[in-house]
Length: 146
Image 1 (cartoon, helix red, strand yellow):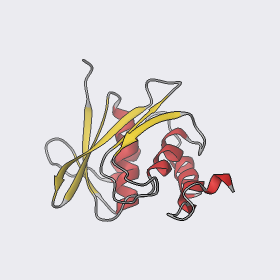
Image 2 (cartoon, rainbow, N blue to C red; image 1 turned 45 degrees about the vertical axis):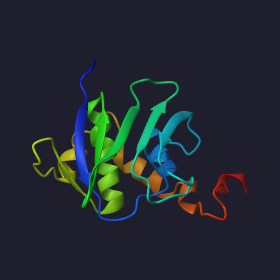
Image 3 (spheres, one colour; image 1 turned 60 degrees about the vertical axis):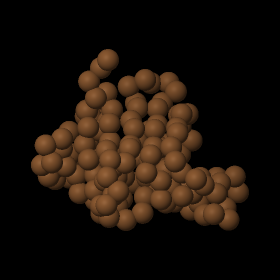
């Protein structure tokens, strides 16, 4: 079994539509990926579990799991450290969250930005901010089909 890298994020607000994570992580609203989680509706903002994996690059994979309910704390894991840093950064940014490591030491977002590897963070933030999935609603869960 390979090493699992982990960071914890105490979230302070609702999560975005889980598909925004795909836009950010893969860099495209229509990227081919596999996902699973506990989003009861596709547009849910209350999900606490998320798995995403590229169908073409096995290195692009991560999981998010709840490890505490009060306060809500989600753990980001991956076999690649840069994936954990990328996703923990985005999750904290989106939820006004606080990141800690396995020793419960605070990890500033600026430090995570330095450890994302070959990943244009600023560009990916723009992609996520402009994602079609930001426009998804309960009444129109697939705005890309309009």
